[in-house]
Image (cartoon, rainbow, N blue to C red):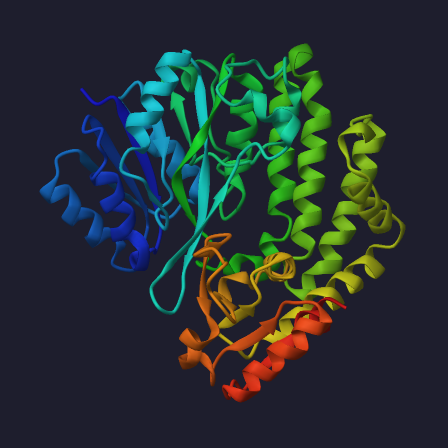
Length: 435
């Protein structure tokens, strides 16, 4: 009998699907069932799935009409037979020992669910997998929660942690007893948010592993961000969560403030991500949600940093002005890098890391191919998962890449001279982007 059911929702992901399926098929834990739910794919995804099922009896393929992510997940979990359930998105991949390690951990801790750290990754032009270790628990004063089984009422601060489901393993009977399921709103996005919130609110024993197994792809661009119909999806998902909390009665009251926090955090973050034409629309919705949460008494100011309070107050005071500022800030970066598919960050020190963070905030950091240095002797092989190379090793990029000089003024002048003498055509100082 299978010990873990791995649920993989699939929709038009033929480009990445084989890597995903291979990583699941090659798990060191052999006692698994792999439930792939083909949600009406129109590319070759269905054929690829069938080929795996033909050669490996552990694979079960469900072909169905397109009804959205939430429905596909509910179908997959509802079909599972193993005592524990894992989730893998079809454009990601996992380490070979993921489920062997997580199964031993959840059984040892007698937990309802366990979560692990993970990697964010993308592939550069040379086929190098650039991956960055992402801790689920980033705050130093919360590190003690790694390896400790706890109830959310004992440590509500766990609601600050990374909000993903695929880096977890779940007791199937816990999900069943607690009636946990995905929201099935047709055509919606962010339906993983509701599942995450339910598991956090209803689990009796939660535990986190300070190891990373899951590789989360960040170079598969989500075009739904440019659809007006998707702009309010994160807000609507938290209406579903609010209804869930209502149904919990007195027991759920402590979660209203966290639902309001997560909703506002998600909506404000998305203002910078959505298309320019949708920024003001979403900012106006944030104002509405903020005022509604205040009216309900669901805002706890102690949960918000000063930076986030300032953002929210700016939005409530003048949504249009906030949207215009976000538009200008994003466009400054995008207008500079939009004509380049490759970026080299010249300088692997503090300013180099700052440059990478600025590009990450601008959602263009997957264009970064390498960090470059003049001399490689005292530098690491990689920084934030990005390989570090000598500038002379990157000569092939001299015509096509934008080189961002990431150094102080004195060193920047020297680095500009290096680039000129080596005939690099396109370079700019980071200060010209950030200033």
